[in-house]
Amino acid sequence: MEFAGCTAVKLTSKSGNSYWFRTCDIGGDIWADGAHAVSFPVGARVPMEGKERPLVAAHAVLGLSYNALDTWLLDGVNDAGLVGGLLALYEATSAGEAADGEDGVMGMEIITRLLCTCATVDEVICAAKRIRLLDVCVGQEQSAANMHCMFVEPSGRCVILEAADCGDPGSMDIYEENLGLMTNSPPYPQQLQNLSWYLAHSPEWNWGKEKPPCLTLNGMKVEGDGEAPHFCMSGTFPASYASCDRFVRMAMLKHLNQEGRIFSDRDMLAMGSDLMCSVIEPHNQGLYHYTRFDEKEGPQGGHASYTQYLVMYSPREQELYVKPYGTTAWTRLRLADCGSDRIEHHKICRYPLGGVVEEKDC
Image (cartoon, rainbow, N blue to C red; front, side, top):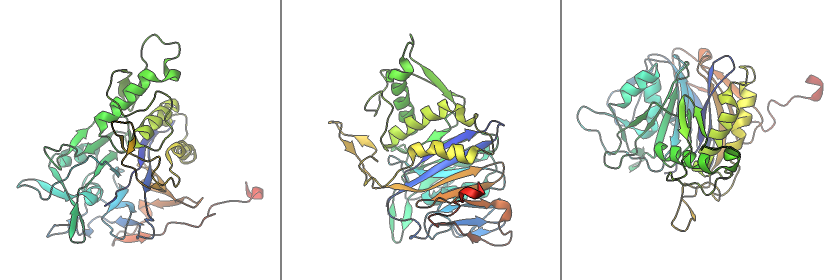
């Protein structure tokens, strides 16, 4: 089973409000497979894989599912302003079943589960300590849940969850200190090493400096280290769609744009999405989307993916703006406009030229 690639980043506006952007990069056509927007009201009885009783939603949730199943959310926001998203991590692990005392959650339902039950990052962390991530069920077959998650609350605090320990499959590693940024493989500690190596070798960042440069994002400091283990091919600004390159590229652009603080709230959708254009994937047949190099420095683990949609979430407003591949239109969906008595599906504009205005109207 192929999971979405993607890039996700938290930006903070000039007035201090947080926004969360993500690209959904995957092969095929998720819209033909039933991708849709769905909302769950408070009290909704949500059936979960492998559970005898449905989950009763403590929070209303609005999000995007990449197939016909409502609970397979790739990202969403709840009525507490908590935003969560799921991205691929090919080194991730999962278990066939949970042990006694553990809370087993099927991988593709982890976002739904945590948004329906948690109001804050602290509550996500507390829940993650009890969760055992379980294999993904596809028909009668099970496959590994190759994924990791990011959650952001209105205060701007965020956390990254990864289950990448082969010795303890499905157990979550919790990264409270992070850059407010994630892509895919390798696991988060190795991504930070890649960035550290890049900082030490970048000609732009080292020009005229006596010490290796450093940067601070989301309160986390990363220092240049020329000896750090890395997957980077050079110290020049990375251009490929490999997940390690997208991580470095977005980290540097986030830093150069002051983590979004040069954008007003009014401009965040336009300016933040322009920033995300640096990681939006066109059709590339997997040539530039890979996860690692072999001993001869050849790219391995290619995926013929492209950006199926770009989305921005506003935790404060509890809303999303989504632009699918092949359209110029943004669809705005607000949790406050969703029904309070039933699970609902919501339309997403996919007209190629939706939202374009004539010159006389500008």
